[in-house]
Image (cartoon, rainbow, N blue to C red; front, side, top):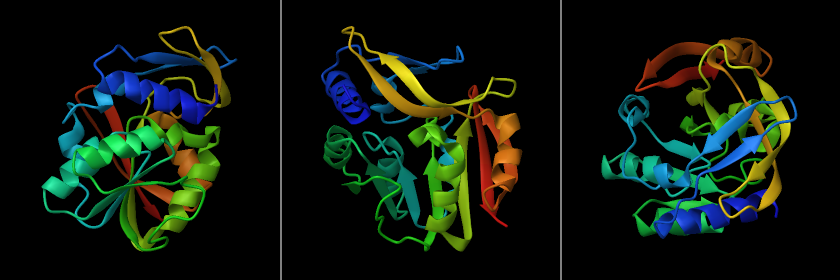
Length: 213
């Protein structure tokens, strides 16, 4: 099962109230836990401080079921969510979010003009190559734009590449992903024409705002 099919199935399960949490294990020994049911909620502790920083048009990369995109729109702020999962996009639209099925590495509306980009819920891992992802985000941002990233806690071992997913029903599959700890972000940013402007933590979550150099 490929990565898109894995997320489609997980979002379908979560939307139906069926346990959908799964793990991704990297050959280095690193493990990440994903819980689509959490992303299907209307809000998660720690969201407020992240959303407060999105004061203009915002692109939510890997929007999932549209929790953050929908919250921004409800607050009267223009926002667009993109996700490779058709199920995620359908669920996002159902809650009133504006969402498109798009790969962040492909054509994206408003490229080079977004005031804010979100990589929440660990989405800095998308694609398994955080250097490539941050370079792409840099190109999507306006010259005075801001990239808001949720990272792993400081001290967490970094890894990237292909992890192996194990779902609740026993299905396995490859997932190109990465784990980026907050204390490794500055070096990563410096290699991708970005710089860390601010960091903060709330409700056990770790965040940073980056801007173009």
